[in-house]
Image (cartoon, rainbow, N blue to C red):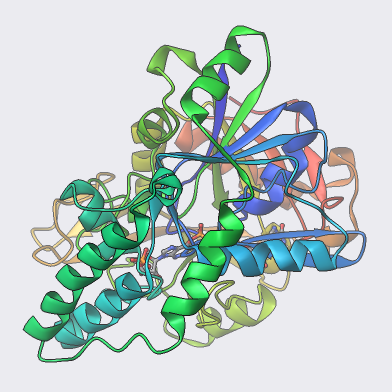
Length: 427
Ligand code: GDP
Ligand code: IMO
Ligand code: MG
C-alpha cells in the first residue's frame, strides 16, 4: 500500500489536526514526520476540544497505531504533559503510540538557546515559538544531538552533560548564563517516563505495515511556506515541512507515496514575523481574526490574517504534488458581502506574475485581487454539499480552476461533523 500525506499549504494552522482526525478511521497508522512542540493541532468532537503538539492526531482512535517518526524533535517534558491530558480524558495512549528511537530530543537548554538567539536577532527575530526547535535541529544536522534511543544507553547522563556543556558555552557567547532551574530534574523525570513507552525502529514498522497491505497517513506539521528550503526564509521553521520531509522523516521511499492532501484556509493566516503579501492590517483583518478565533494553539499569539493567496497556493501545490485539496474555515467568511482572492502579484518593475519572488525583502509585491460575491449564509448549519449556497460553490470552482486540483473536502466548522466531502469537483 501507499503512504498518503497531509500537508499544510500556507503558514501553518490550516486545520491539519481536524482533518487527520476525520480521515484517520480509514487508516491503520497515523505518523508525524517532522516538527515538534511548535505544532498545535486542534481536534473537536463530542463537545470537547483537544490540542495536540507532538502526538499524532489519530490518537483518539484506539485501533490506530500512532507513530512519532524519526524526523520529529521531541520534548519529553511537553510530551509527558500531553500524555497526562489524554489520560485525564480517559485516553490511554501508551498502547497505541510508538516513538522512533531516531527522533531527536529537545533538552531544556535548547529552549534557552532558542530564546537567546531570538533576543540577539532583535527586530529581525523570527517569532519562534521558543520551544527549542531551531537549536535542536541545528544539533541534529551538526551531528552532536541526542536521540530518543540514547535514553536507553547506560551513559545517557554523560552524553546529556556533554551536550549541555556545549550549550552553556553558546549561551555565554550571547553574553548570558545558562540557568536551567528545576527544568533538569523535570526533564529527567520525563525521560524516565519515556523509557516505559514503546520506543521502536519506526522505519521497519512502517515499511512492514505497507508490505502487509496496511494504510498509512502521514501528518504534516507547520506549512509549506514555513519550509526551511522553500518557505519565506529566514522566517521559517527548521524542518522540511513538504512531502519530501515524510520520506526522510519516516523512512519511506518516494515510490510509496499515494494521495497528497493539501490543506488550506479559505483565507490566510500567519503567526510570527515574515512576509505576508495579502495581510490585512485593517478592520477586515480584525473581523476575520475574531470570526475565525485566530489565536495560536501553541502560544496564544494573535494570528495575522489576510485574503487567500493563489500564487503561494500554486507554489505549495507544485512543491508537494498535491492530488486533493481540503478547504477549511469557509464559515468564517460568512459575514462578508464580497470576498477577495489574490490571483497574481505585481512587482515593482510593473511585471505581473503568479510566481513567488526569490525574496520578499528585495522585491515589493502588490497583490492583485479578484472580488467574488460572498455567500452570506451560515455554512456551519449545512450538512450536505447539495445544500451549499451557489455563491460558495462559485468560490470553490473559481479556486479549483486556478489551482487545477479538486477540492474534495470543505470544512465548515471546527467539529468533526462539520466536514463536507465533495465528489463532483470542477477539475
Ligand atoms: P493545525 O495546526 O493545522 O492543526 O490547525 P490549528 O488547530 O492550529 O488551527 C485551526 C483552528 O481552526 C482550530 O482552532 C480548529 O478547531 C479550527 N477549525 C478547523 N476547521 C475549522 C472550520 O472549518 N471552521 C472553523 N470555524 N474552525 C475550524
Ligand atoms: P502547526 O503545525 C503556525 C512558526 C512560528 C515562527 C516560525 C518559526 O500548528 O501548523 P519555530 O518555533 O518553528 O522555530 O518557529 O514558524 N510556526 C508555526 N506557525 N503553525 C505552526 O504549527 C507553527 N510552527 C512554527 O510562529 O514564525
Ligand atoms: Mg496549529
